[in-house]
Amino acid sequence: MIGALDQRIRLERKVEQPDGAGGRRETWSAFADDPEPWARVALDGSTEREARGRKILVQSAVFTLRARSDVRGADRIVWDGRAWEVVSIGTPVARARYIKVSAVAGEV
Image 1 (cartoon, rainbow, N blue to C red):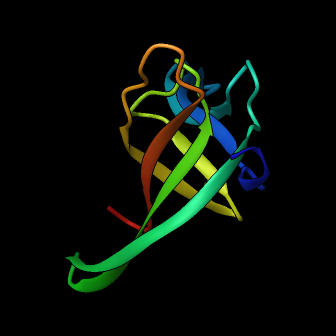
Image 2 (cartoon, one colour):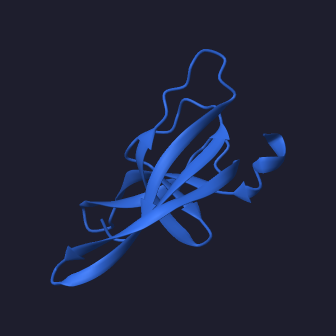
Image 3 (spheres, rainbow, N blue to C red):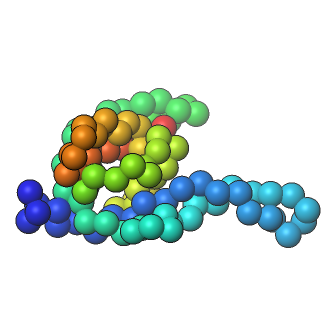
């Protein structure tokens, strides 16, 4: 499997920061620990959805990366210039070497 982890991805988490006007705004920040791991990317098809009166193409993918416990459902993956919203994370078993993270790109 090691040779198959051939794509560099960036893991990001939504954080709140001051907006300079006394309020707060949400932004994305790279993970503090190993923010750009290697992964295997398997595109998993696409679907069309209707939103705000127009059709939108939503692409699905499964990202396989070395096992880690800090990826959450509200995080995102940036790969090949696109932001992928995490939709599910495979439950790692004891001593698992890899996890699979399902994500979608496009407007959802």
